[in-house]
Image (cartoon, rainbow, N blue to C red):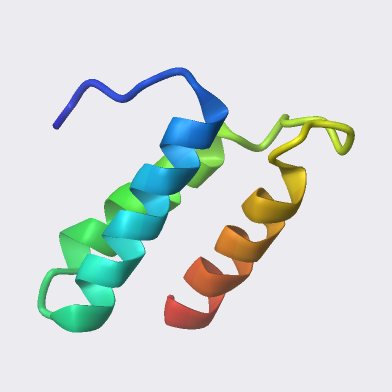
Length: 66
């Protein structure tokens, strides 16, 4: 799981899955750490990108969990 896709939509889906996995078992802090690292890769997504709102939503979820 060290190689991550470049597609924004796929990355966001992966981040959401990692968040869900962490929420189901908070001992799995690695899931939240991976989600945070992936979010850093998406910092420069422009506001006009079709996935921008999903990105904002996912960022909020991660912030609450950290």
